[in-house]
Each structure stands twice: as structure tokens, then as C-alpha cells.
Length: 93
Image (cartoon, rainbow, N blue to C red):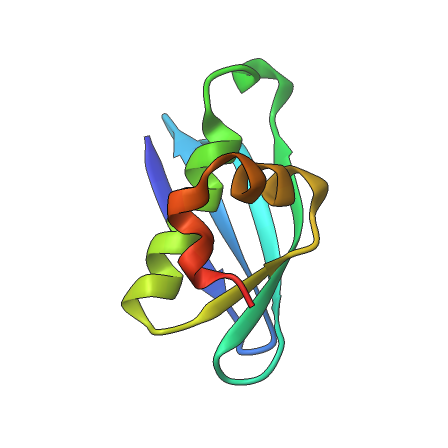
């Protein structure tokens, strides 16, 4: 399993690849230089129930921490992960 991030300076995405197949995708939009908004998370139905969505959110948290960034989770799934996981709320704005 591999998580990769792609970014064009305005929008970006984290994706999970399993044997070169996209298992999940989470998109975000930059809100200034130090904040980004998670706006969508989706998991390929073939990989449902395997924690792919949470891995995407955790990859965004790690990216935010490493780069001194803040996150606004507008996506209902990402928002629910932040609500259930207090230890990652340090990156919220």
C-alpha cells in the first residue's frame, strides 16, 4: 500500500494505491499559504472496511504537522475522523 500526494498549488489530493490500483482518494483546496480544506474523501468499494479513508486523513495530518499547516475538514468523513480522534485536533483551524 502506498500513499501519494499530488498538488498544483491551488488544489491537491492524497491517494492510496494497492498493487497500482487506486483504493482511495481525498481531495483538498488551499486556503492561503498555511491552511487547507479537506473537501472530499472516497474509497473504492473493493477496499471498503479496510481503513483506507482513515489512512488518507492521517496522511493529511502528518503532512500538516511536518509543514506547520492547519486543516479544515469540510468533508463529512474527514470531520468524523477528527471528532473521534482527539490527538489529531492540533492541526485544526
